[in-house]
Amino acid sequence: MYPRHEGSGLLVLAFLAGLQIAAECRGTTPCRPGFSEDVYKVVVPDIAEKGQPLFNVRFLDCGRSGLVRLECSNPADFRIEADGVVYAARSLQPSTLPASPLLIKASDSTTQEQWVTQVRLTPAAASSQQVQEVAVPPVMSKDSKEIVFPSRHTDSTLKRVKRDWVIPPINVPENSRGPFPQELVRIRSDNDKNRSLRYSVTGPGADQPPTGIFIIDPISGELSVNKPLDREHISNFHLRAHAVDLNGNQVENPIDIVINVIDMNDNRPEFTHQIWNGSVPEGSKPGTFVMTVTSVDKDDPKTNNGMLRYKILSQNPESPTSNMFTINNQTGGIITVAAGLDREKVPQYTLIIQATDMEGNPMYGLSNTATALIRVTDVNDNPPEFTAETFFGEVPENRVNVIVANLTVTDKDQPNTPAWNAVYKITGGDPTGRFSVPTDPTTNEGLVTVVKPIDYEISRTYVLTVEARNEVPLARGIHSPRQSTATVSIRVIDVNESPYFEPNPKLTKLEEGMMPESTLTTFTAQDP
Ligand SMILES: *[C@@H]1O[C@H](CO)[C@@H](O)[C@H](O)[C@H]1NC(C)=O
Ligand SMILES: *[C@@H]1O[C@H](CO)[C@@H](O)[C@H](O)[C@H]1NC(C)=O
Ligand SMILES: *[C@@H]1O[C@H](CO)[C@@H](O)[C@H](O)[C@H]1NC(C)=O
Ligand SMILES: *[C@@H]1O[C@H](CO)[C@@H](O)[C@H](O)[C@H]1NC(C)=O
Image (cartoon, rainbow, N blue to C red; front, side):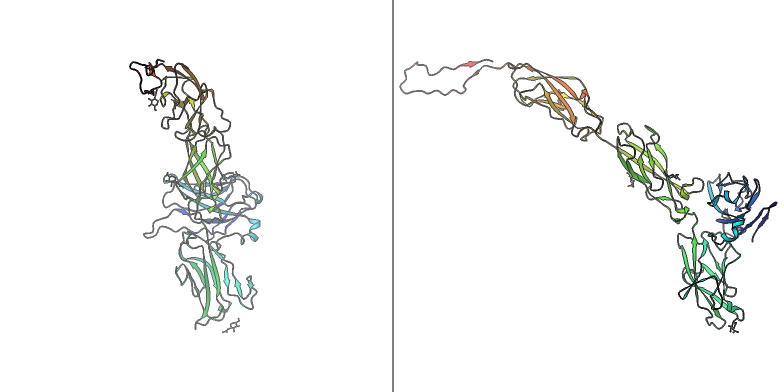
């Protein structure tokens, strides 16, 4: 059970983890490829020369040999061969060992499947003190711990807290591939020396639902786990262990046993929405907040397995630059990093966002992607501009409410918004206020309209100056160009007016006793 490789000279290496021969495909159970362990614990020699074999991992390939490729996370320090043997890629000393676990990845290029295992490295010199502290699942370290019922006479390593005994929790990794039952720990009473005892465990996971996960050999006291555990389903178990004699008499006070399920990275980050909608005003300064995207991972957030990092994979269009936005890799907050957002050029950006666990490690983390749609909203950064410098019109004299000329403007801002709608103002050439220029709400044209009658005999032409603006002021830094002012030249048309009497009707008095043929009044007509 404990492979021991002997290298030349100093090399002594031991597998505390204990490489278990991976379960072979038996009966109808389909063969599941994978590493024989999710975590290997390895003691490496204090000084290893370059090229020295250090340890090996075992990958159960279910007959795909040759298709599965093995890689190390620190290729500068370690080299792995196809048979799973790991060599020192340079001379190694305890001080130069990587602090974080070594990760080994297996990938099948034909199916895109990947498997990752961790290798915890301990230098041989340090191993004697440190080994117990590292969170090694006891299922692996089979110099098996015993849990002894506390006895009044024995000075056990267990600490007394009030009346209860505190027993260190047992750590069991989830998703173990077996074979089952897998022994965890042996429970013993010192009273077994002069009499036969029977051991049992109770509680959820043992005799209460979900039953049968943990079993104990009643005679030897070996406590085993009988099936793979799922931390995302149940993260810990609280069992009670009992010892009785053959007559069923309790010979020890029951003890509490806590079993913690150790997380493995068996869940991919999931975005809470597939499409995220955000917006940002055009012309925003770099550093403007746009939106936040969120992804969740069911794995333990206190471990790397549940620690996510966000990243922008692509931006479309890549205009005016390919990096208009950046994402806070921990919060998922998206902000602008470049100037030049212009709705009139790019009204919307599409970002592909990726969340990766294992703190974003691209080689070992599991990833998922989502889409962020960023709408660039309009601001009034374009003034209305007349399509001509001068417009012409004609008006018959003495008519009101006639449209004399239509002034057309263009405005690049979003149609039918206050940043597009034009407002016209006569700034010159109309001292007597004979014209006004309302806006046609559908075409945005300025309708030069006569509001007071015009007399040809008084003025034959008008030359108006008209200014166009938007309903809202222009954005800061944008100035109204010359094209926002136009001249309107209006010719007044003479109308052949008929002569008229004045006054009309004319009041005349007929006095009593007037002589025939005497004059009553005189009618006078005029012709303009
Ligand atoms: C068994 O041994 C323990 C101490 O070793 C002693 O206290 C106890 O009385 C013994 N019991 C029997 C049934 O002999
Ligand atoms: C964004 O908009 C799309 C369609 O317009 C919708 O399907 C999606 O649910 C929206 N996303 C959010 C987070 O509201
Ligand atoms: C996350 O961002 C921080 C600060 O910008 C940076 O130091 C770190 O390297 C980034 N991590 C990843 C995984 O991208
Ligand atoms: C001006 O516009 C009005 C309404 O949009 C239209 O009825 C009229 O014919 C136009 N006149 C000229 C001179 O284009």
